[in-house]
Image 1 (tube, rainbow, N blue to C red):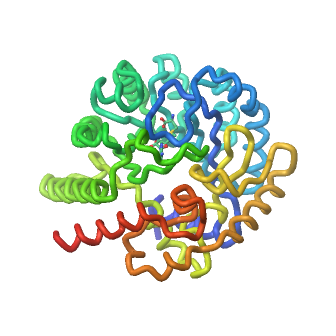
Image 2 (tube, helix red, strand yellow):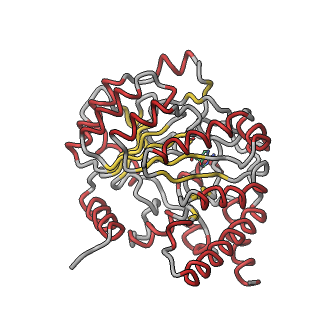
Image 3 (cartoon, helix red, strand yellow):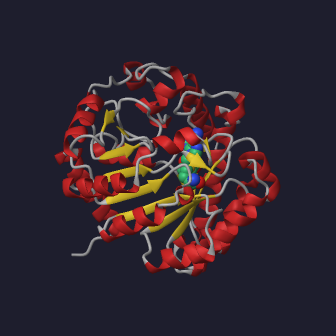
Length: 372
Ligand SMILES: C[S@@+](CC[C@H](N)C(=O)[O-])C[C@H]1O[C@@H](n2cnc3c(N)ncnc32)[C@H](O)[C@@H]1O
């Protein structure tokens, strides 16, 4: 009997949840970035001295990867900020590459040079996900504060593809780039790669709120946008069937990992998390704190001064103590809602208070579905 990689991946994660093995590790190597994206949840200037002083060293990240590997980590995400800003990124990457993880790198690709692409092509990660926040220099100027960034990002993307590296695109949609989405989908399609949409814009993790500066779509706009991409997906499916070709060569995906993993977990009702966080996944912040996921500043356990397994155990205990939102559990809109403790906390300041934005979005999703 043969199984697909997708089935094996699900099986491994289910086992890891049952045994509380930290199979997924996410290392945020820096908070610094060369772009200034309006909605980004972690963004420090590229030459921020305070951030530089508090970043952990290459040796510390490598030692952490070794300890996590010994505890069962198989999937590793390297992200930031922008990892290619770190002068010692090559040292970190080459060391973790030798450890045999299934490694993904998130990058804005603007700093990828022919030499960097060649180097990565020689020891390729499993995947590089290139974030692209628009389809023109004008949109890049509005969203990322750097018009020239668009050309450099697309050039970087093409350099990576030319090396035969597995690349996909990611985007987050806000007011300033929503009109670019179809063009972004075409850009991905032309290159035969996937475009993944992060459909929820979180308030900033480090406490900057959801002010209008983040330009996130209103619940109504987001629900309409989701329907738009669903219809594009259906069209694509029909076309693929007519052409008799596989879907994946021009796919884009909605980022609904929460739903997929939620189904996989069949969690007990009192469990607040509907994802892998704190069960078999952890996030390491750039300044050395272990948290459940990218969007959460708390709960945290300090890691670098003690054994990995000790910190991981403590994180699990802290996550298990987070209360589920009982009003959300009883809510009739639950099936259309992307509720989770990270989002509730960032929206309301509490883990167990319903959030108006999420509730409205769930309501709009229902209305739009019924009208279709
Ligand atoms: C913070 S960026 C950093 C990594 C890298 N510099 C890049 O450009 O991919 C990583 C991912 O976070 C997502 N992201 C950024 N801001 C977000 C927010 N406020 N809420 C949810 N996701 C966000 C983006 O879609 C991006 O792909």
